[in-house]
Length: 111
Ligand SMILES: [Zn+2]
Ligand SMILES: [Zn+2]
Image (cartoon, rainbow, N blue to C red; front, side):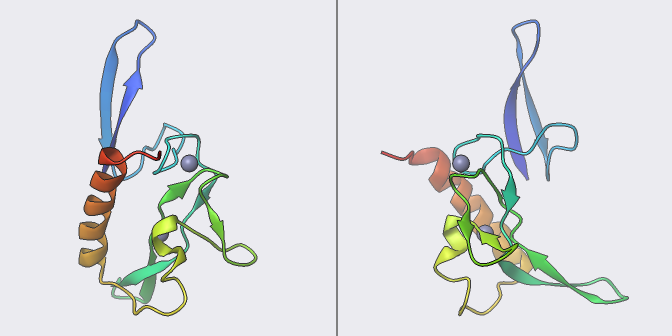
């Protein structure tokens, strides 16, 4: 779940939270620029009862923060190093990692 601060036309602000803004354009998870790509790294699987689906990181990235890993494959900086060889995380681990990553990104800006 991510939250963003949206600026309203009257000068006020509103905090919008959600798994991914439905009406708002996606923003880069690192710098909050408009995002153009999502991380394709697999972080687990989900059994829907019909099929076992891949769960991917789906972190939004701008053109400057995406890391290309071949045609149609882009990963975030978190997964760039581990994309090829690490075992998939469970969705729960991924959610916990996301929380830690968001803290790290918000608390430690790029120098
Ligand atoms: Zn960015
Ligand atoms: Zn990722």
